[in-house]
Amino acid sequence: MPEITLFRLTSIMLKKFDYKIKYAVMSGFIFLSTYLVFRSDYPTPENHVNLCIFHYVTGYPCTACGTGRSLIYMKYGHFKEALLTNPIGYLVLAFAVLSLLWMGYDIIKKKETFFKALNFKMPTVLIVLIAVITIINWIWNIYKEL
Ligand SMILES: [Zn+2]
Image (cartoon, rainbow, N blue to C red; front, side, top):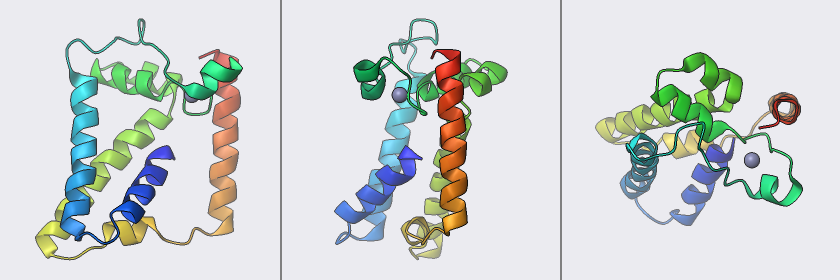
């Protein structure tokens, strides 16, 4: 997922900083993203502009295309449309909520486990499984003409 990659990159960039600063930056990123999506003037799924560079260059959707629209559908309570537009929207939401809870738990317990958990060595089976699901979702996105 792009969010995990982003979090890992942030973790590397902020390596020498205290974990509380890393958590503040990541929480700020999550809250800012949420604020932008929930602003009343944010586009609806119908007038949403696709900002995907891959889609712009190739004319085809990438596997993550429609994630923003999925989140916007959820904002309006259209959970079925959200799932059908791109299930990654639910993964992003779950990841954001779990990240905030995990970082909050770490702050209360005064220990750093969140970023360490993100940097775990993935077993090959899991990498292959994620790759297969990503490709299937990508084919579905092309079929849906997102
Ligand atoms: Zn895309």
